[in-house]
Image (cartoon, rainbow, N blue to C red; front, side):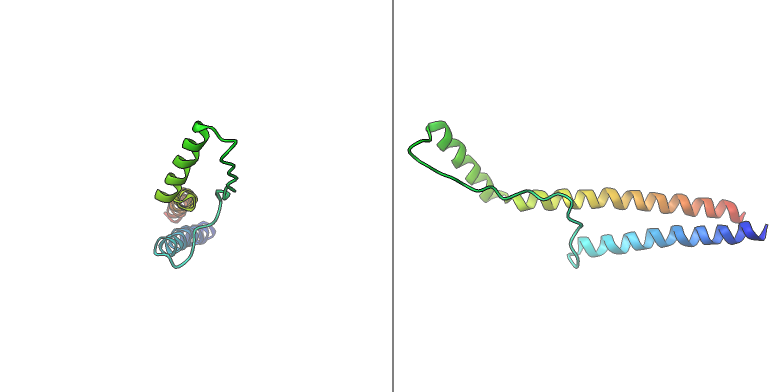
Length: 109
């Protein structure tokens, strides 16, 4: 009986610690104090241009790519993907912490 209550309190503390630590790291990431874990990294493409060998289609494609990279740099896409990945991971950790805390509450009762 006493062992289950002690285990319950340990689980409550562990679950709350997981939730609090995840929220702390999320706050730091979204406030810009630390960077999100780098999972996705879009490589920088090397431009090779030979104007004589490219046709009209190639020139149009190159111009469109250049304009798109000026509007939205490729680094923005990787940052958005990394933040989305962190958000998913944080959601999983918070959900797991809540479940662990719930099990601890049931053991205490």
